[in-house]
Image 1 (cartoon, rainbow, N blue to C red):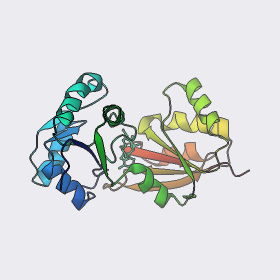
Image 2 (image 1 turned 30 degrees about the vertical axis):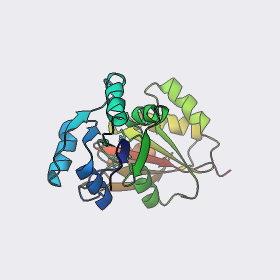
Image 3 (image 1 turned 45 degrees about the horizontal axis):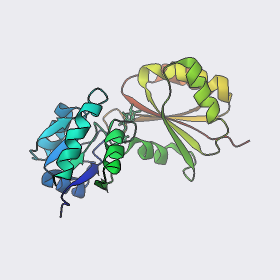
Image 4 (image 1 turned 90 degrees about the horizontal axis):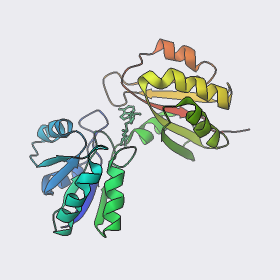
Length: 228
Ligand code: SAM
């Protein structure tokens, strides 16, 4: 069932522990090793499903030093599952580096699809789903951020951003300045968790909306595309 020497890119829940596929559980039970971001977080998921596997942390600080030994294990026939703290690995997290290095070394990659905050937010936003652009996290610096916003100002599809709660007021200001007041905005907060909330507004009213909802937890921000 499991292919030796393969890197399995396994999606895990973005909040609700039950959002994990049967196949993801099969793979996590069968691999030799699980590579994750935070070992405590992944250990608690695996323990919940009575899975007991060696875990190795893989993050921005250690990814370059850890990668060669992981590639050596794969080349020796070990099978490895790559997971992230939440959702689909390699989407705005360090797993991308391992995926790219594995491809360079001729390792077989197998996706085990499942939750990702991008699609969970998009399908409940009410914004067009037929075309969308995911831009991940914008820069922490306002000047660079505005340049990034200008780069997608003409995009016709729905624009999807990841953002830390406390930076939202600044992002809101820059989005309004560059894109103008009319675009619709959806804030998808704490999806699949206890305090899940979806707020719909426009860029003009976004600063007010941000005063009404708790700036805590995890957010996806969706902005309607350029329809002019
Ligand atoms: N790999 C993950 C995925 O597939 O969604 C995303 C990893 S990225 C480091 C983390 C960001 O995803 C958060 O800052 C937030 O923007 C978004 N996110 C993750 N879980 C979320 C949730 N339950 N509700 C809303 N946004 C979430």
